[in-house]
Length: 145
Image (cartoon, rainbow, N blue to C red; front, side, top):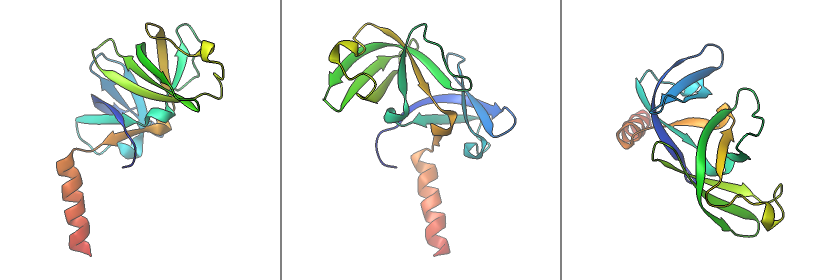
């Protein structure tokens, strides 16, 4: 896997159709492609930081999107993008990379202390497999070669 992935553990089930549901520790339901589910009762959920959009608290959320709430801890403006570190109410942290196209002026960036919604498509959600599972998958692949 390339890049960083933010993760959260959760129990999962199938919601019907093309998406399954994983519930993280605080009870929040996150949708992910049903093909990602492998029968495990607990999964590690990931989403790439550049796939997450930050919306102001109270903003209208699109239907079917995954949403986590948080508070901006830190931000680093780098010209083409801004990196945010967002604290979750459950004590976790999420890193978000946001291109500065929509927020071109520095005065429109999110600031530390702001409450935000972290929003992304269920299609961008994936299961992070434990290293032992990845090792077993690699061994099976080598045995077939």
